[in-house]
Length: 377
Ligand SMILES: *Cc1c(COP(=O)(O)O)cnc(C)c1O
Image (tube, rainbow, N blue to C red; front, side):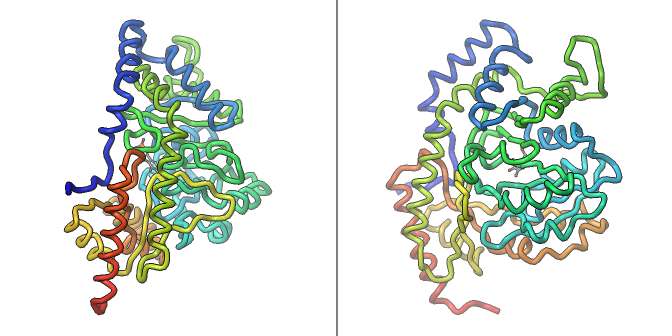
């Protein structure tokens, strides 16, 4: 039997090909490629989907985060709290506006920021907490909101992996001061290129991001702020209009695959399963297991034709980009252990039942083999 890909868009794009092609054709025929009707439609529908007053399309997820921080007035001298275990973009957004990164360890069960440690990291200079809904699972928002609310600290959601996820029945994107989304092609909602958006109920933040993404201008050739160029173009917006319509169905497929995995793996010796927090309705951007002998597990699975990946093999504070800085001296035990133990299994909506079966039996037999070998010290 052929191997099971870690991720593929081929089946989804075969299914949506006619709709995507006619959306693209519509844009070409209209001849309007930047800040037009497709983007307006998408911003309207995506705000409604998230349950927010505003959605503003931008160039990518990193810029969505950085533009929110800029709109909030976060800059040099300010501190931004971030989780240690995340994709480095979360940290780079704070760097981009000249703020100081304050990294906090994560909860070892959900891999999301530890709210108690985040609270302990607050100083008089703390202006924002970037909360990542990692792997598609919402962070512990009630604890974070309580802590930030009384202190005038903004909660910025990094929802790049969690389009459609819910917390206490509300969609991510609507849970904090403002939220950043990425539409990188492999995300739960992906464009056919780069893309991003911010969502918020705050008129001032939305207005400011709208200006900042377009040279600080909302009226042509009038510039009220020193803005940049970070726009979601019409072609990408037209593709996203097609894909937003199937997002819930795709997330539902992910949920059913996750539930098959979790049922099959429950009680398997040595295998740590993803914990789902109270109130959280995850959308399974990734299905991440952990194992003390992760590299061997990955090798065994590879031998059985199951492709896997590691998210993430090295935390930001251990990257060369941070060498010589005080951040490089941090010790974040749960973050560092996650980097050594996590393994992401194939998780994409178009996986067939037979492929999911194949992953399940390969994981069960690999875990058995590893359980029988004595662990090396
Ligand atoms: C993908 C991702 C980003 C960055 O999005 P881009 O569109 O690639 O800039 C930021 N944060 C997290 C958690 C991500 O997964």
